[in-house]
Image (tube, rainbow, N blue to C red):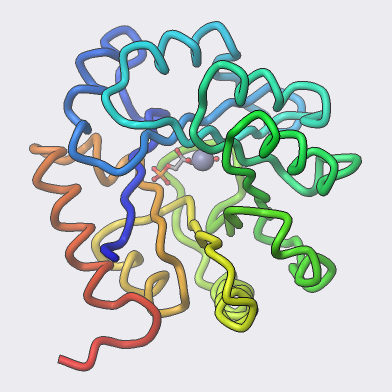
Length: 225
Ligand code: DX5
Ligand code: ZN
């Protein structure tokens, strides 16, 4: 299974969004960062905009909710057809109940952890989720530097997922580029969000292929050849 590359449209041109979505049609999913100016100090867009993105995107939506009270707001994104809805454990009142409700609507349920949030309390709950998102920057802005200190947490999750045998994706988000994607892959990620690295490239489609090949070579352990 090749690595998944999910470009983040936070780095796209918001007034030419359909054009920019077409540039990343060869990616696996389109990563859609919803920010509410409360959970993070930045504001992007809400369900109306995400619904239009869903209408025109040629690939499925990977919605990343950086919002307070996801228990109330996350379900709407599943209802409008998002393939995957990831919410932050720091913001959710009842993560397991919310994940079950998202799955009941038909979305994959994802749990995101900020760089300083430990994973240990959630390892028993792995089967309740389809994806874990290890933030490799503080959420809120694109273009930040990858935090390598989050890698032990990712490796712990990889070991737990492998032991469970469940089909759970491990996603990293923030500062992913040609170099850091190798580190993240070696530490257990299989799904990679990249904003600046894709949209600032001269040819986003070529960059997606390059990132995918590089990550796939290093999936789960250093490459042997
Ligand atoms: C940050 C967002 C990321 C962001 C990544 O809070 O969750 O998805 O777009 O951007 P880059 O790849 O530029 O770090
Ligand atoms: Zn994101």
